[in-house]
Image (cartoon, rainbow, N blue to C red; front, side, top):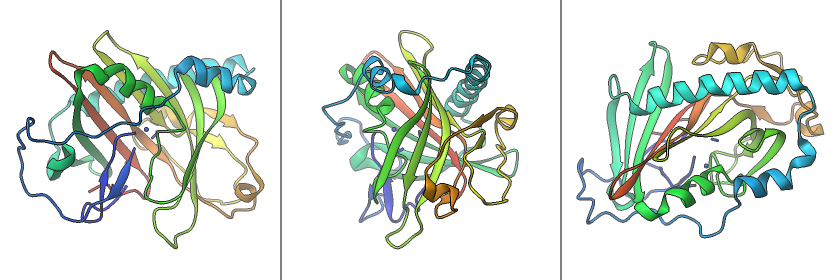
Length: 269
């Protein structure tokens, strides 16, 4: 998403993902966790039930689409877990010890860039971290410039379609994306939040073909969304998530959060 000499990621999330300006690049490769300042998450968030209730009027009535969305996101979760726990092929890129974040990067199958960012939160923040990253009012792909996230469609409490609008430079063009998002508890100690873009017809007049280069079956998922006029008129630039999300794992004395992102046009480090 961002060049490392200008930004660092800050906790929040599809999502998609959270970054603010960094003045000085840190050089230490292995910070002492006892001396590291951990990110301070927001204190207020909505639960999955509250988010569902707020957006229940957007519930999808197409049972086939719901079924296909669920199947696709099962695959997205598997991909997210693989890229999160796999240590091969990643190269160390940078670290911000004052925020306990380590940056990695790799080329997936030689042509798709995947970024990994790891950080820790306190043990008692496991549940609240999950809620915060799932809440669209908190979790943003970018927060250095104006950003707006909303739920565009609901499939169930833990499976939705989101729209996100943002600018990645002061005078840059407004960009947007649509993506499916899911939250899955793999065990009592592990939760995954995954995002991926699919073949979603938002009536953008651009003839550009968008292809998911990590989750091939995402290209087979089809949905149509009633987008706003500025999208239909081509006033916004469309972007695309191949894969993004969080792998959140609880240990005896802390919680590891691994952020994965492969998003067209976004540079994280």
